[in-house]
Length: 191
Image 1 (cartoon, one colour):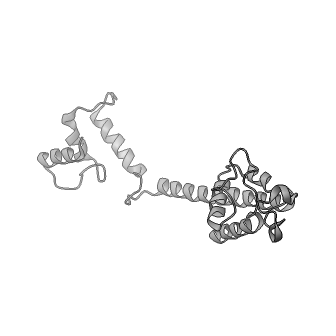
Image 2 (cartoon, rainbow, N blue to C red):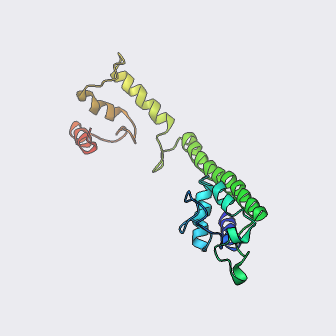
Image 3 (cartoon, rainbow, N blue to C red):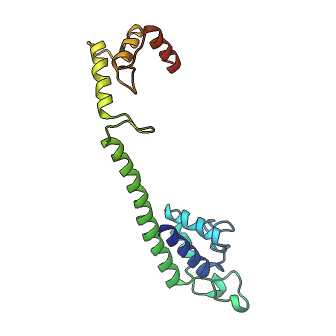
C-alpha cells in the first residue's frame, strides 16, 4: 500500500509539474536532476521531500499561475500544461508532506522502536541480538566476585577463571575445559 501511494504521487507529480521551468530557481532546489520531468526523477524528488529537504521551495516554483513564467515549453499544446498552479502545487506538496513525512517516517520509526523493545524484552540469545539482561547481570556479579574492591581492573591471570564461571555466550561454563583450552580461547578472542 505504501509503495502504491509513492507511485501514485510520483505519477501525479509528473502529470502536474513536468513542464515547470527549472531555471526560475536561483538556489538550485529545482534543476535538471531534481524535477518532475520523468517518473524516476519524481520518485527521487518525493524521497528528498520526505526528509523535509526543500519541499517548500519546490512548491513555490510550481506555484505560478502565469503560464509564460511557469512553463518551460510555452508553445502549442504545452502552454499551461504540466506547469502546476497555485491550488495544485499547494495541495500536492502539502498532502505529500502529511503523508510522506508524518506517516511514512513515523512508520519506519515505529518499526525501529518495536525491534529495540523486542530486543530489550527478549531474554533468549538469538543470533544478531543484544545480550540479555540476565547475561549482563551474571557478568557483573562474576566480575564483582573477582574484583571485590571495585577497582574495575581484573588481573590477566583471573581472566581464565572469569571465562570458566560465565555461561555462554560470554564464557564457557557448562562445557569441559582445561586451562590450555581457556588460554587458546583468549588468544582467539584477542583478549
